[in-house]
Image 1 (cartoon, rainbow, N blue to C red):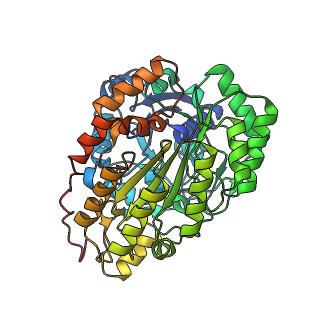
Image 2 (image 1 turned 45 degrees about the horizontal axis):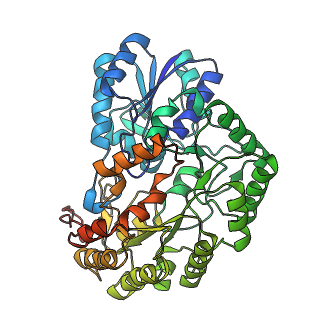
Image 3 (image 1 turned 120 degrees about the horizontal axis):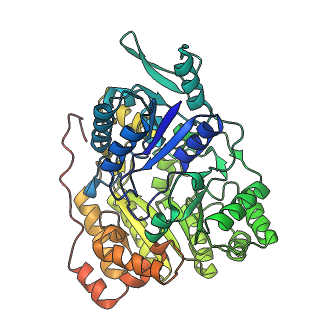
Length: 492
């Protein structure tokens, strides 16, 4: 069959995210013998016009759309993505008779709700490398769909949903087959590598267990090294990024991977997201530096024991402090993520977290970032708690962008406290600012690329923010407080 894959993501906050998930499915589909084309709406200069042209010239039987996010989860700078997706689907309907199939993280989170909000024919939940080619076979042979894992479709006026599949093994994405990497790299992107799937942790707000399941499936480090070697030889990215939900869970696997990279003799630059403060040691940081890491993202979310316990993070403020000390000693640039306003948050606990940042994360290679308000996502423990608390209606539709704010502290107070931290510590940022997406930030990133500097470029933001006139200008401003979302919830 002729299959057109569409990467629908249009948002470049902080870093442009390459379509690794869609690449996995496109590669599996091409390997199954189907004719495949790929439209990347994130990096296409003509965007919707290219989509129209591909529909007209290729005349696909199926259009597969990857939906990365429901929204950007920043309450004070909210961008929702489903309306944009609706416009993309309208273009497909106007120019093609193809079946439309949805997939991607946002679709796995929404489940069968996705077909209630989006005018598509099918949705694939979970990992689609096997399920999507099975759907193509069923469509081609006019066979029933009931046995296809993770498939949602309409039948007799109802939406049928099947549980998503978790593949026991997976390999390289094959992304180099589908995208123009030079365009991504000019925007400061890093090449994504997935080492393992599944997250056994129990953070109340997190959707990773919904998307990937809790059972961890790890790739052999030698196989990962061979993928890096092949991509380095053919595409030559300036930096590779490990995108597992938690890089150092377990820590022994992260150390084994770094040691394999060192043994291989590869001279590459590496970064990672999702570093857990608990699973951090001097040994791990040392092998990360030797392997080629130039940065990392760390996700404590809070530095208050009371809030960390409510979030079920599995570590304490002491763990966060110890991690901060080790990372500072290592010299590896780091970005730290904190969320204010969660269940159980008070002025006391919020002040505890912000004060921790002021005292322990105020150094030149550190970029602490705050969000205020917790996006309540479908299927999370937080969503269940919010319903039990009466914060949400029992039938509340969480495709709508609704945020949790602790009733014990106001959004305005939290933002003012962050602004005080910004005035004291120039490298502190709020996600509503998003300095990387500004015109100035974009020009700086382009210059860094021109001079051959390896991404991720956020690691240079602390130096930029520490320039006195930049810091003074930010001190005179405040993070704009968005009016609270008005809905029919009892407390939202």
